[in-house]
Structure formats: structure tokens, C-alpha cells
Amino acid sequence: MLILKGVEVYRNEKRILKNINLSFEEGKFYTITGPSGAGKTTLGCVIKGFIHPSTGEIIYPRGNVKNLQERMGFLLQFPERMFFCDTVYDEIAYGIRNFSLPHERERIEEVTSLLSIPPELMKLPPYKLSCGEKRLVALASVLSFEPDWLILDEPFSALDWENIKKLKDVLYILKEKKTVILITHDLSPVLDLTDELVLMKEGSVILTGAPETIPWKIVEESGVELPIVPYFILHLERHGIRIPRSVKRISELTEAIKERLERRRNEGKV
Ligand SMILES: Nc1ncnc2c1ncn2[C@@H]1O[C@H](COP(=O)(O)OP(=O)(O)OP(=O)(O)O)[C@@H](O)[C@H]1O
Ligand SMILES: [Mg+2]
Image (tube, rainbow, N blue to C red):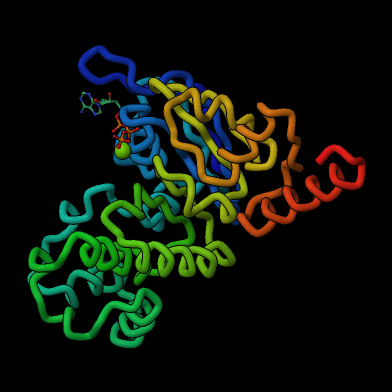
């Protein structure tokens, strides 16, 4: 368990993280969301150790701070800022070499095939890639050293629908093996992956919980766009139509609405 106790961060006398108290259990999938400027990236940087809190403390599992922080993979919000090698291959290999891990070529083949990165990209300088390709290469370089903890900052931005679906499939695989902290303002792709949602606003955590317990009204009011299923659940509730909170997928929502209509028809109301 990684615990943040009363963590605060100041920048230019402005408090950009306010009294953050959170715990992250190993093996779970966390999604941190909130509007722009809420402090999501800053919180990710604090967990990784890029930023030291002005006050408060972070308690790392088994007390092994340095080891855990080093072995945390961090996908930056702007992946082009991560690149400094001459080729995509070297970029992906960097973590493997840094940790002196064996079987470089096999590891790279495994991770590039997982992310469907075409072999013809490997010799290119990273700056020549498209935004979506850059993001996948940055993720490959994070995954290649097989970190146990992953912090992914806005991994879906700049990806088209095909790549979002591909990344979602990869996240399902990673969820089985790793602790994932995913930062996103777009909840749609991660709703059914998420064990625990953390909602931030203006530097504070305003709620946490499993998606099926989340009061979506508060999420909507915070300025985060609701994924389609919670959006419909919330708006149907406003019209007196209650849908079970366990419903997560469109197919389940359609079933629930169908059942509801059939019940009403049987009661002679439709
Ligand atoms: N080095 C800095 N100096 C001053 N202010 C900063 C600094 N870094 C971040 N901030 C401010 O802290 C706040 C939180 O920034 P942060 O990047 O963590 O937000 P975010 O939730 O990740 O936003 P986005 O969704 O746009 O990525 C913002 O108001 C930002 O302007
Ligand atoms: Mg950010």
C-alpha cells in the first residue's frame, strides 16, 4: 500500500495540491480525473518522486522508497518531452539498458507487438513520428523495463479510435499484472477498467470510490464530461427512471431500459 498523508505542494506561493490523503493498494487500477488544472499531473509527479511535497508524507510499500520510485513507469503527458535517443529502437531500449536487463531484442519485440508498433518505425528518429505513434513509442519505452507500478498521464490524448481500442486491450492485460494509476480527463475508455476513481478539483481530492458507487452528478458538476453510460443513468434518474448502478456497458444499459419498458407495458403504463 502506498499512502499519501496530508500532502501539499506550493508553486510560486500558490497551493496546487491541498491536503491530499489517498492510499493505493498494489494490484489495483486507479483512475485520477478532474478538469484541467486540477492538479492531476502534479499528483502523479509527487507519487513518482519527481516533485517533493512541501508538507505531508508519502509512505511507500515495504518502506523501500528509492527502489519503488525507480521501478515505477511514468508515461508523461507530453511524450515528446521523454525522447532523447536517435532512433525509436534506442528510445524503447533505454529502460532495458538502464536497468541492465537481459534479452533486449526479445523484450523489444514483445512490447512492440503488444502495442502493434510497426517494425519500419524502429529506425526513425522519434521526432518524425505522428502524435499517436509518439505516444505508443513512449508507452513501449515505459513498459519495456517491466515496471510493477505504472503512472500513465493522459495516455489516450492524440490517439484515434483504433489506437484507443488497442490501448484499452493492452490496459486489460496490464491490469492483471500491475498497479496502474491512470490520469485522464476522458473517463469513457477506462470506466470498466477502473477499480477506484479519484476526482480532483482545484488541487483537492473531492471524491474517491468504485465507479458503481460514484455520485455522477458531482463528477459532472466538477467539469468532467461523463462517459455515455453514467450520463444516461444520471439523466434517466432525473426523469424518474432508475437504472441499477452496476450497469457499466451500453449493452447492459440497453437491456436495463428494455426490461424497464417491458415492466411498464405489463403494468399498462405504456
Ligand atoms: N511549476 C509550476 N509553477 C506554477 N504553477 C504550476 C506549476 N506547475 C503546475 N502549476 C499549476 O498547478 C495547477 C495544476 O497543474 P497540473 O498540471 O497538475 O494540472 P492537471 O490537472 O494535470 O491539468 P491538465 O488536465 O490540463 O493536464 C495548474 O493551475 C498549474 O498552472
Ligand atoms: Mg495534466
